[in-house]
Length: 88
Picture 1 (cartoon, helix red, strand yellow):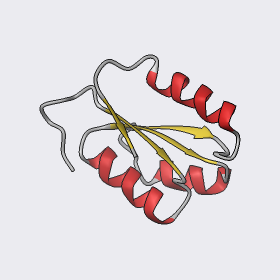
Picture 2: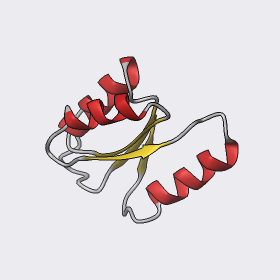
Picture 3: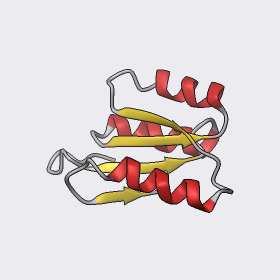
Picture 4: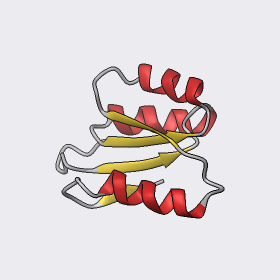
């Protein structure tokens, strides 16, 4: 995944503490997108962020079972960004 023609792209990815979420976060960050990465597991979240050392990841603690928290997270993560979001 590469977005050289869209440097202001942001990806919002949940469940980044392991597995598919972690892999997706790494691929998007390596491709040039900024990733708003979230997970309820702080240790897994920190591990994923450490695997993306170029500063392309902002980490958020989030439990997706809380609808209001998810909506607040989306507003926080996407509010300051210019460009079209990538929702994953």
